[in-house]
Each structure stands twice: as C-alpha cells, then as structure tokens.
Length: 467
Image (cartoon, rainbow, N blue to C red; front, side, top):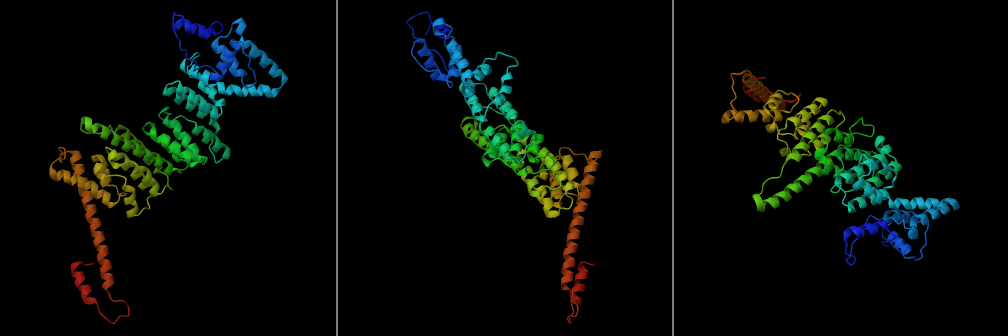
C-alpha cells in the first residue's frame, strides 16, 4: 500500500530510514473505520469488493484521507463514478448515501476541533444543530476518545443544546413534542466531569424541563448538574428556575430547594473526604469554605427576591432560605434582610408564623447595625428582638464590647436603642401578665343567677392586681 497511499508513504518515510524496521501507524482518525480501511487495502491489492450506497461515502472519505491518487489505485475516482450513476438511477440511493454520511461526521468535527483550519476556532459548533441527538452523542464520544479539552466539549454541548432547543428555551410549554426533544438532548449531554456546562445555561434547561413537565429522570439529572456548578450561578439564574413558564409568578421553589440541598450534600461529602485524607497528613485541616459561603450569599439574595411574592407560603420561603446551613454564613445580615422583606410583604402573620419565618436566621450572628435595626423592628417576633438584645447585654457585662463609648453619638444611640427595647420588653411582659390575671379573675366571678357569692376572692385579688 505504500506506493499507492500517499499518507502511508509519508508516515513511513518520516518514522524511520531503516526499511527493515517495523512502523506503527495511528489510523484511528480514518473515516469509516476498519471496514473502510479493509476495502481500501483490498482495492490496492486488486481484490474484488462491492461499492454500495451505504459504503460509498465512507470509501470516498477514506480514499481522500489515505491520499490514494496513484493512477493504479484511484479509489476516489471509482467511488465518484458510482455516486454519479446512483444519483441518476434512483433518488432512494442518493438518500441512502446522504444518510450514511451522518456516521462520518465525528471524524471531521474532531479534526476541526483539535486542529482548527478556520477562524474563529469554534465556528463548527454552530453546524451541530442539524444533527440528531444520537449523532451528537457520537460526536461527543469521538471528542472524548480523542481527549479533547473539557472546554471544547462544554462549548459543543452548550451550542448544540441551545440551537436544537431554541424554540423550547424561547417559549417552554407543556407539549409532548417539546418534552420529548428536551429529554433526548439532555440524555446525550456529556457529564459534568467531562464538560462543565455553564450554570446559567443549565438553569435555563432546568426551567424548560420543569415547565414542559419532562420526566423525573431528566429533571433530576439537570438538578444535579446545576448543583455541581451552583457556586457559579447567580440569584437571577435560580430565580429563573423558580418562576413559571411566563416568568411572572413564583412556582418552582421546590426545584430550587432540591438543587441547593444537592449542593450542600456534595460539599459535606467532599469536606468529609478531605478531612479523612488530611487527618493523617496535616492534622485534619478544614476544607476551603469559599464555595459554600458564596452559595449562601446567592441563596440570601434569591430569598429576598422570592419574599416579595405575596402568595409564597412560609414553608416555601423557609425551604429555600433554610436549605443552606446557618453556620455557612459568616454574617446573617443578608438573610435578615430577606426575612424582613417577607414579613413586610405578609403583614397579617401571627406571632408563631413570624417565628417560623425567623427560624432561618440567627440573631446572634447579626452585625451591630443589623441588631440595632432588629431591636426596633416591630415586624419581628419578640423572641428575635430579645435574642439580639441579649447578645449586646452579654458583651456589655463581659467588657468585651470592642471599646464602645457611650459618650459618642453612636454610643448614645445604642444606649437609647437598648433602653427603648428594654421598655418594650417590659411593656409586653406587663400586657401578658394583665391578660392572664384578667382571665383568672373572670373565671372566679359568679355566673349570672348563681346563689353563691365569690366577692371575697375577687376583692383579695384586686389588692394584688388592681384593675
């Protein structure tokens, strides 16, 4: 085959100058694979084989790859003559040839991805939209086998999904056709380890999957993909997932909660694994908490946005805001802001309901400015106000209040705030005591028409608590 194939001849000449030495050739990129190479070799040796509509395209590409331009081995010319005759004889044969070309696409795509011949380098990603999901999966497999850069895989997957699902992403709705297309595309996306697809785009896919009512498998797959890159997502990305198909009302908070919970589980598993490895090496140092803190800030921003929804139930708000552990937040000022917005949007909540809303924050982790605001916030339940004040009192009594100066304007404001809050607490206690005593007195008074007299006990009670 050396005198008849320019590719092999050049490879052998470059590999060694010793004619007796064995030379290994990498033909993994040959279009058509082993079958096409076998037929090309048979053609070079003069053996008979059949050119059909199914193998003609592969043979033509293999002939070009091997550079079979020798007059005695011009396989390309023979295949072109067959194609011309097949096209003239019947349309079905021409269609069969075109369909067989689909299996050849991974090879030229891999070559262009790894060794660009045009600019910009990623121009070929726009051409992927014409592929079926099954063909795109073959492209991904070929790129992975050729050890393409993860960024190349991610760009290819994002471009294909966005182009193939353009209509679904623009106007997702409960449609069987949209649902089937989305499920088939998501099913062939490369794994997060092979290709980290951007979080913003994954959130769009997840929103479309929920809106079109895709299968639980597809939705869970996307939830885990988003969780894997959640530290790259913004509050706007997650808010897009939570909104309905029209993007107007909050509907999918459970989906967002599951994504956050999956991220927390990943972080906890990773932390445990790191601690196990580092315990024997460096005394068990803690892993970097940066990703968790970043996600906590994102969740607090999202909770503040969700809190403005008047129809949002307390359980939904608490489910999202409380999905991140309290200790993941260095400061609870952001989550306090979200809580305050929710209480302001829902003014009819009773004391117990307000306490449920406030359960997502720790008043002891508020900054001084936030505690000062909380101590005067009438929307907060009394327990939250007392917790904030108790922290300040402890610092004052321990003398570790970072040099607070009661003579400065800020010090006077703090002192006044504490005095006001203390007065409010005492008034609240007095009101509660008054209500209990009134109920007790009312229960001891004689009912109408009763012959017994209970004026003595009532008079005695009035001496202790005059009304």
